Image (cartoon, rainbow, N blue to C red; front, side, top):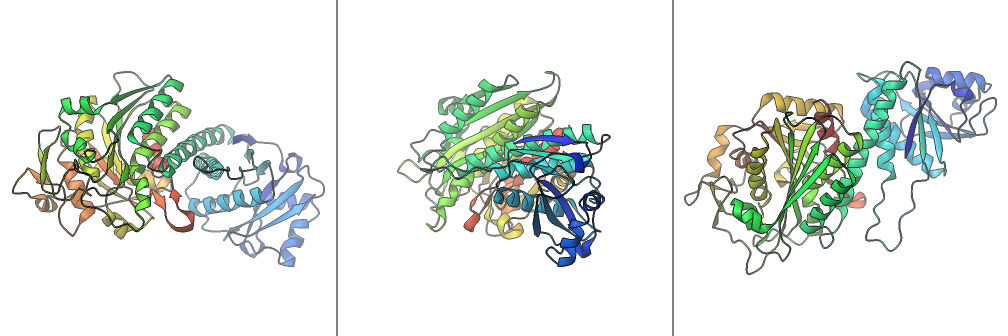
Amino acid sequence: MQFSTKTTALSNTPTSCLVLGVFINGNLPDATAEIDKACGKSISKILKAGDISGKIKESVLIQQPQAIKAKRILLVGLGKKTGLSLKKYTEVLRYTALQLNRYSLEYCVLGFPGLDVEKTDIERLAIQTAKVFTNAEYRYSETLSKARPALKLKRVSLAVSTKQRSRAKKGLDTGAAIALGMNEARNLGNLPGNFCTPTYLAEQAKKLATKNKLLKTKVLSEAQMKRLGMHSLLSVGHGSDEPSALIIMEYKGSTAATKPQVLVGKGITFDTGGISLKPGAAMDEMKFDMCGAASVFGTMHALCALKPKINVIGIVAAAENMPSARATKPGDVVTSMSGQTIEILNTDAEGRLVLCDALTYAKRFKPKTVIDIATLTGACVATFGNVVSGLLSNDDELADSLYQCGLDALDPAWRLPLWDEYQKMLHSNFADMANIGGRYGGTITAACFLSRFTEDFKWAHLDIAGTAWNQGEQKGATGRPVPLLMEYLLRG
């Protein structure tokens, strides 16, 4: 998708389709009123006839409008004139993208200049515009015999004033890069487990580095991890024929003296639960258990596209959790890279076992902050559904920043307490800790477990078990929380 800005008068802008907004009760934004006047009040006539009321998810296509250079006008409902939020504006954009594809249009101009979107500037509107239309391009095709029809729309221009142009251009570039990262994350998440293995993820990281001079990739083998003492991570893959891997991607956009932000992703490429076997129903969705890792990959893709002057390290702990004669058993005790011992009471609580060694490894980079991202607990889904991600942290400033970034990026997270009272739930008679904390507070006790490996740096945990993929007819990875992560990283 190509994005650009237009500063010419809308009536003199040649395009296959000009998109204009209409509020409820026939109220017209200034740009729509301008075109209505130029076209002999043709828009007002359509409104009077009742063909569109202005509600969101309504539209009317006007063919060959008079006295302007656009070949068509697509009128879309904007809802109420007051209280137009960024969330509602984004909903309008998604609907618009669907309608434009329905009419087989390759180029459009969005005539939304001057819209009063609450607490939003032109750069943010441009970011959302590019995100929505780039996301609309995504088609999964890797395991289909015939590719799904591609999005016909190829070019989108945003009408802005001359004063707004530079910030709008920056926003379009940023939004396109973020959505590129989201689409990469979606594709990795959607791949089946017999395609997307730890080895495959390692290969993709190496390929990305060969295409980008600012990125360097290193992959630790099982033998190397064993020498480092990563027996917790390695225990998860014992039952699989697929070798586990620790993947390190270093994006260096600033000087070596600049402390890096570190992202750690859970990369369980398929999770049967191991000996603590999951129920068969919906087990196919456990290919999505590497969506934390996919979000790290997506973020690295976005960084390589934007090239910001920051340092970011992406670490992916990749393994496949399978039952076999070699598999880790409930009651086994392993020693983590940190030297702390863990009694594995449930082999289906494996994400924290790979993450704890990856978090210990992250310490060597002297990070500014560390954020891990994982589809970690069903308890998080029970609490938040698919609306917000769970957020826990050992640092209030970091947690507050991530919370605000999530709101601004429309990729929200909600903080849960990480209090000492929950730590006692991880007690074990046979090791320094157990890997589960009992029936209640599962999202919190999982984070309490991870916190024991993060005492030397500022750390936050994002539980994306509810937000990483959709179920039902629209089943598929979402690409979250790439927008949240990029919002945070770009703020420095």
